[in-house]
Amino acid sequence: MTKRKKRGWRRLLQTIRHSMVSIVRLVMRTVTRCSVTVWRRIRAQGPSVMVDARRGQAGKLRVAVRRAAREYAQGVGVELTRDLLVVVQRIVHDGRQLNALLQAFNGPDDSRRYVIYVALSVNGRQVAEDELLSALRHQLAQVLGDLSGKPVLTVPLDLEVPRLRSAAAVVELRPDTRTSQDKHERNDLPVERIEQKAS
Image (cartoon, rainbow, N blue to C red):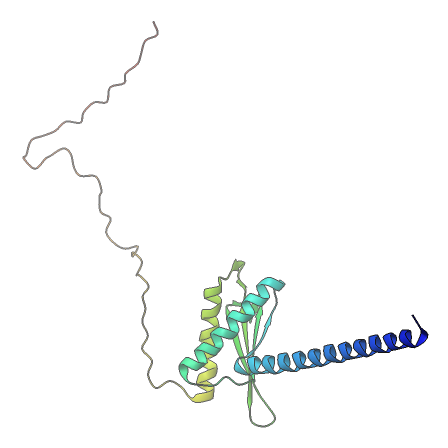
């Protein structure tokens, strides 16, 4: 191979390398911009969520909390603002351990910022995910009521079965076997003990 051909191949390889590097950089920039745009849209649709848990559980709870808040707000017809932060942490304490706690702060431009604390455990008892989301929705109802006004109609429904009162009469479960319905007296049948004699 002559020197001219070697130089030509080197220039061609350098051109290909520069082109590949430029294409990779362009693709990376495009992917980054798209992911940032999508992430901003996702965050704009729901509250900011912080979860104090292991990575797998934290990711699952973050998705569940954001979805529950978004669906609840859409169902009520109110748009959730970015002024809402949900913090899922091990315990929530305000003089005693609570399932959830709502705090509101007045901003400088007469806007309110809300923080909802939701507990993962209460008094040593692990809270199930459905119970956690129920506590979240209860606090969201307060936030949305503060944003859009109180509900004009509230109908409570209590489905809890009442417990047996301690003062209720004791019912005897054993019927009286001494007198039967046909008025014949019955004697208690003797219980015989059968023993096998050793032969």
